[in-house]
Length: 201
Image 1 (tube, rainbow, N blue to C red):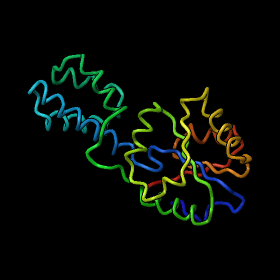
Image 2: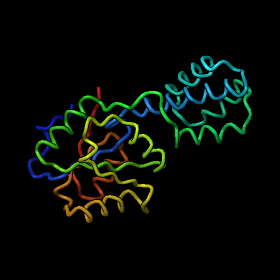
Image 3: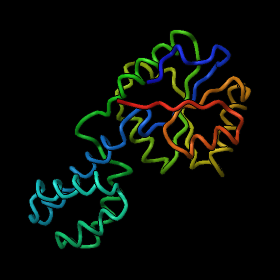
Image 4: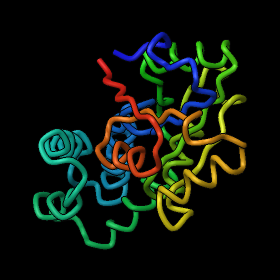
């Protein structure tokens, strides 16, 4: 588990990934599936939302998002036109419950703010969807200290990180990247930025 004491004293800014680093991605995805299942039940009356949701949850834990709609369609016989509704929900869903930070991430970010270390989020994936997650996360007042960069708005994550450094006046050796993916680890290596894995419990 990563704590503030492990942040090198030379670092002036920490750049966090979002999914499965600050918030559990499943907390967003499963709420979207809940909304979709209820949407289908409301429009088509069959299948019952609880049956579809149970199927989607089980499949999600086994295989993730990929191919979800196709398997739901095959299993329950819903029309292909509803695939667009699922895509829209992922981008714009108004969640029943707020997304909560991992408690370790919350504690670390609070210590960074107290110690005047700048904090950023650099997140990949559909920018509208990622913004929707950020807007529906309970930040406990940390949002006023956060600056967010969406990698998909640049040619590459490397470009996004360079812009982040340039706009905020940081050198690569003053930055620390925190995430859980190999992609983010490779970004740090290629950008000559230190990287730490934030394993959540």
